[in-house]
Image (cartoon, rainbow, N blue to C red; front, side, top):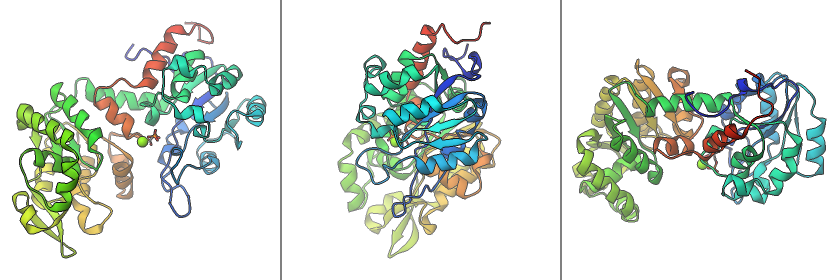
Length: 412
Ligand code: 3PG
Ligand code: MG
């Protein structure tokens, strides 16, 4: 078996009480708190459909305590109604008496959506499955279910009660989205078709550096093309001088810069850095060679046209292409071309193409390209964590659960 965990098809699910963990954490308009992108909600459809003869209780989160978009899931539940055929009910409770009553009342062919599981303080701790199985959340709710299904791939890197606590005590299966995500990403980590190219950009450099280290050291990447702040980190490591604003955040990122320098030493021939930038000078876009950026006083906003050409040519010659993070500030019309051109080159190539991270996937869908990729991951952090070679707590928990499960399984 490819992955040693159980799937929905391994269980008799008709009329069973199923706790379904999904990740429908969605970007929200900061002013109105309306959901801006419902792709994670739509992605929950296949598992909900597969469970149409079960009694389904959905557990999910939105944001985290302290953030402006840490809201109830009522709106998410209303959107879920539009993607599945079952009647969907929402309860403004997670583990109190009204939630327990509503769970017990959920009939065959019905879906109940519990409120934001992170409203429970215990869910915001990360620990082992064994410890988190003792939380009130798990001890109160697990007796009400026959089966736990994890379809929350975007949360698979979190060792929280709803991810690792329930599978410690309930028979557990992977949902269909989680399986689809793992199949696509394992293909990248297995025997990718060559050449295999990674485009890594965006702002969060600490998440990208471990990915680059892993794919280069394991030989999974033939080319790593770096843009956005990731590109700046590598150029800094190669000795480039930037303008003051970039120099100041780069000075605080010495750990990443040092790692980039060491990678350039070991794998320099496989790392492709920008040769020019789209810079903002007097509120206009100018193409500036990287070596001239400090004296130009331009603010780096995008990869330049020459770099876009190098990157898109490499994409066109590749058989596997993975992208995470934008190449520049694509939200501004004059600086979107770097990100758009690489997405278009990927979408029009015959390669196995994977993109991930909310920003890039959202922009691909705005450009009308989303269905032209082999796989658009619903995850940001979880995908990067997997590409960095880390074990995902959700998967380990499902694997451990499979070795414990004896009940409820279909007899072969
Ligand atoms: C995400 O969007 O990153 C996932 O939903 C997990 O949320 P978190 O990063 O707040 O744990
Ligand atoms: Mg996150």
